Image (cartoon, rainbow over all chains, first blue to last red; front, side, top):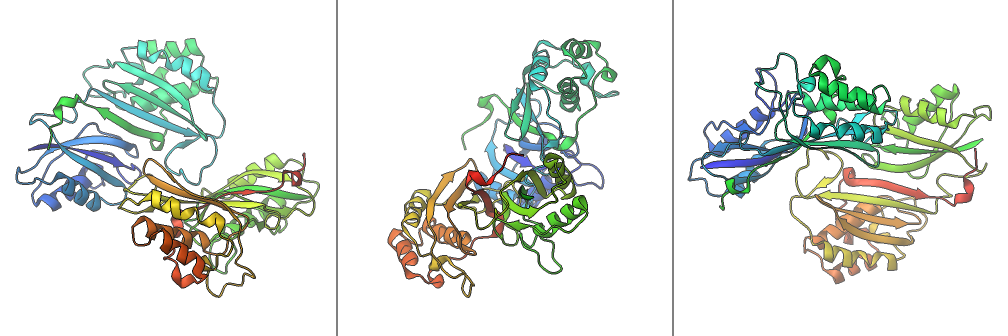
Amino acid sequence: MRCFAEIAYNGAPFCGWQRQPNQPSVQQRVEEALATVVRAPVPIVGAGRTDTGVHARRIWAHFDLPDSLTDLNRLAISLDRLCGPDIAVRQIRKVTPDAHARFDAVSRTYRYYVIHRKSPFSRGLAWQLPRPLDYEAMNEAAAILPETSDFTSFAKLHSDAKTNICKVTEAKWFRTEEGAFFQIRANRFLRNMVRAVVGTLVEVGRGRLDLNGFRGVVEARNRCAAGESVPAHGLYLWDVEYPPEIFLPE
Amino acid sequence: MRCFAEIAYNGAPFCGWQRQPNQPSVQQRVEEALATVVRAPVPIVGAGRTDTGVHARRIWAHFDLPDSLTDLNRLAISLDRLCGPDIAVRQIRKVTPDAHARFDAVSRTYRYYVIHRKSPFSRGLAWQLPRPLDYEAMNEAAAILPETSDFTSFAKLHSDAKTNICKVTEAKWFRTEEGAFFQIRANRFLRNMVRAVVGTLVEVGRGRLDLNGFRGVVEARNRCAAGESVPAHGLYLWDVEYPPEIFLPE
């Protein structure tokens, strides 16, 4: 029986989603919890591989369970308890036998949070930038992204991705009480792409790059043209969407 | 020159607002920062004395500065930098010479946050209670509080307070995405009062105490009648209000 688990995590203590030798990863922690409950090793596949320190408000992972396990609510509660305070398992749902958390995702949404003053309650949860940014200019520049298809300028060099083509359907800054967040949705993301896009938009917000300059960066298809990547702790994998028909009734 | 500083803090690493021997307090940390900037000891008086682990979204403290210090914005920025990540100094304002952060406060507002599921992003910032509560019943009971004047049932035993009379002007639960918060405003609060009130309302929300039972607790004027105090880390001193005329133009 194939299942999807909805998971949230604070990325601070982890080397990222994916298992690494001698470092704590989200995948390892969830797989260990699953093995404890199921009493057998259960490999899981996540919707994406977040980098060290990146958070996830909602990510899905798939795995196969023995058909004898019928109470998925109880399993989710047990897993949630075993995963420690930094990982929450929200629910487990039965899916079609070949459903794949990564390949079946229709879109992914990321958010990047910026705060403009010290916040004793948001430590490690947003990037603190003392000076305000010109969010209007940043949104004018961000509007170029949905019209762009080749994101080579924001791709990690020497990456093993076969193509740098992405379809961005939303890219916008929203103001909050203490700062702002950038929301970007696309069918796929290249490694490090969101943090490089945000870093370049921050250059626009600081007045160091104008709209044409930003367009030039995008069109250069050269990572060296873009701004520096922003820190991991402001970034959240916010949501992953699937075709509704892959979810089965229990 | 008398000044008020607006301060926010995460209570987790502190023994509370007030200085204690051999324990880190918010007062000590702010006084040390002030002494560094002013190059002389500057005692401060806070609007209230929060207990160990209790947070403050907004508290004010008063102190006297040499008249030669004219740039209060710059002073606030220096203090904010010196206070570390858990204490934020938002602003410093000039006030009338005899203004008193504690005695001139017209009202104080506290909030108590409850969440009903694990939240990897709210660790230490809300009380996690797995089962939902009957917030409608809790609000019916809370409505008794503004009609009450004697809060002996929610006062710490052997306290040195001269009277247990408080005028509560708001007492209500509000639902949030992950749980709820209780907001209570009064002219004054007794030590431990909010946590005892919340603990007793939670008994109502669990169905262990009905409306008449809650009324009986209030009318008993006996701390032993009330429920257990809830943990400190869900509690925030949310706001303190003063007559606007104490604030002077710079």
